[in-house]
Amino acid sequence: MSDSSLDNLPKGWKSVPNDLGSDQTAFKGVQWGKAMMWIFLLSDTFIFSCFLISYMKGRASTVIDWPNTSHVFSLDFMGVPVPLLLIAIMTFVLITSSGTMALAVKYGYEKNRKMCGRLILATAIGGLIFVGMQAFEWSKLIHEGVRPWSNPFGAGQFGSYFFMITGFHGTHVSIGVIFLFIFARKVYRGDFDTGRRGFFTTMKSDYVSIEILGLYWHFVDLVWVFIFAFFYLW
Image (tube, rainbow, N blue to C red):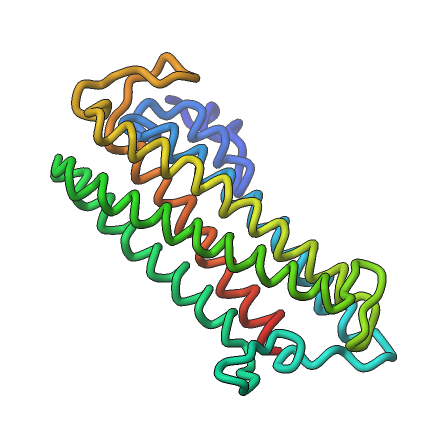
C-alpha cells in the first residue's frame, strides 16, 4: 500500500472499526454464543447499575429516616430475633451454587456426563431454594405492611426500591433455574455428546453451551453480592 493510501486511513479511535472490519483473523474461532452472552451481560450490568445508583440517590436525598435493615430483615430463631439471618443463608446458597456451576463446566469439558449433570442439578436446586426464600421474604414483608408506596418502618421509597431491585434479580435467577433444569436433561440425554440440535435452534449442541449458561449464572451471583452490600448492609 502506498504512503498516500495510508495517509487517507482513519486515525486514532476511528481507526479501530476500520481495522477490525478489514481483519480476517480477529474473530475467527470465537464462539458467537459466548460473545453474545457477554454483550447481554454488559447491557444487564448497565440496568442493575442504574437501579442501584437510583437507590443510593433516593436514600441519600430522603428527609425521612431510612428503615433499619437489621430490624426489617431480622428473623426469629429460637425466640431471638437474628438480624439478616435469612439474607445470609440466601447469599451462602447462591454463592455455593456458583461453585457447583463452575465444576459443572469443568466436568462438561472433560465429557464426564454423570458429574456434569449432577452439578447442574445441584446448581438448579440451589437457585430454586434461593427463589423460595426470596418469596418467603416478600410474603413476610407484605404481611408486615411493606408496600411499593409506603411501609411502617420509615421512608416510603424503601418498598418500591426493595421490590424493584430484588424482584428484577429474582426474575433473572428464576429464568436461570429453568434453563439449568433444561440443560441437566440435555446432559443426561447425551445431547452435548451427540451434537443433537436444540428445540428452538438449528445449531448443534456442545459443552460450550454449559459454559455460556455458567457465565449468566456467575453474573447473577455477582449482582447479588452488590445488592447484598448496598441494600442490606448499608
